[in-house]
Each structure stands twice: as C-alpha cells, then as structure tokens.
Image 1 (cartoon, rainbow, N blue to C red):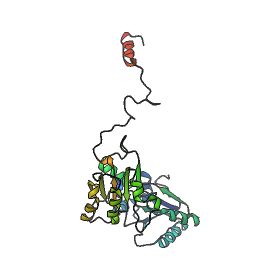
Image 2: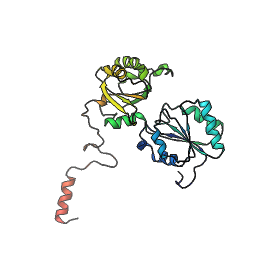
Image 3: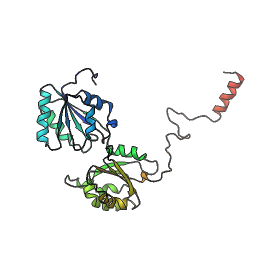
Length: 276
C-alpha cells in the first residue's frame, strides 16, 4: 500500500464499503478513498457520508441510474488518462456485488485492478446482536444465500434444500419474497426459531427486529421492509449455555500443554525451600 503522500498507481480499486457505517471501513479502504482521483460510487447502496473521507477535488461519479455498459467505459477511460479509480461497492465485493463481470471486462481491456474486502452485513448483524453464530454442540455452519427472484437460484441451492441443515442461515436480497422464504424455512426449522430482521445495517435509520420464524413475514410487511434487509435465522440467537472447548481448562494443545498432576504445588514447594 502506498504511503498517503504518494500518488496511487493508475487502475481500478474495487473497494468494499461494508454495510454502511463509515467506521467499519478497513484502514486500506480509508486510505484509498482519501487518495483516489475518481470515486465511482454505488450511491443507492452506500451512504453519502462515506464520501467525507475523499479528496475535495476528487471526481465523484454516481452509478445508481447507470448500467454496466455505461459504468465500465468511464472507469477504463479514467485509468487510461492515468487516474486512480475507486469503485465503491456496498458490503463485501465477494457477495452479491456483481463484480465478476466488472473484473472480466477490466481484464479484457488490460486495465489493472485490485479488490479490497469489506465487512459483510451478516458480520455486522452478529456484532450488533452480540452473538456468535457458531455455538459448540448447537450450530457449526453458516449459510449465506438468497431466495429465487429476478435473479434465479440454481435448483440445487433452493432455500428448502439448505434449510434442512438448520444452520445459522443468513438470507440476503429476499424481503420482497419473504412469505415464500418463510414457508420453505418452516418446513425444517421450528416455528419458534429466532430470526433477526436487519434493515439498513450501519445506516442512520438502521432497524433490527428479533422475532420468531413464524412471525418473519408479518413483521416484514408491517414494517414495510422491501429492500436492504438481511435475515439471520439461527438457534444461536436464542439462549445459549454451551461452552467452547478452546479455553476450557481440560483442553490442551501446542501452546497450552497438559499440566502434570501436582506440578504447580511442587514448583511452589521448591521455591519456598530456595532449591531453584
């Protein structure tokens, strides 16, 4: 990473902005935003206040009303004129961000690019809820998925086939189809399974509602949540008493070898007699 007093290498920096809170940007993302010549900004998904980090003379290009065919030539042209471009995406670029086709097009145009990860909404949700989504003896798997809508999910990944595991399931981009999602989940999860409905995490109007699975659709409709909503369905959201083995006194490993019986007492005895 270049020092802040040095210009960035011309290219496209695909930056994950996280769920919305500017304080949750990575340090690298903040440095890039503070240095870049051009910010290509998904303004319908990333809060305006994140732009406060940018240079005052940076060119800001808003893309909410643009197609990929309009956005890509803009980025390529700026790089070819020796500009550094931050492509600011919501959340983490590896999840539901449509960067696959952007990276392919940049590579075909022989434009250098780099990807900088961001915090995903499911991580922010767990932090806000103060829960661990993997609990020993209860749940050890996290599934990130969505229900079929305008973007179809492959048949082998239909929600019902994933719900059978009763894992911690994080459901993205599904508020418009919440009734169908609830029906499929109820086929495998108990009706009283806790669900966190997380709306615009990290934004000033953030809302988190903890309900039972059988209430998920009704509450979503009552609150008029149709976009930017994440559902976390998990037994880990309920009362948890299980303890990890990792820090258990009976659990030994390379850095915490098993103590010999009487070792502590013997050492104290030696110290008291001045033998060591």
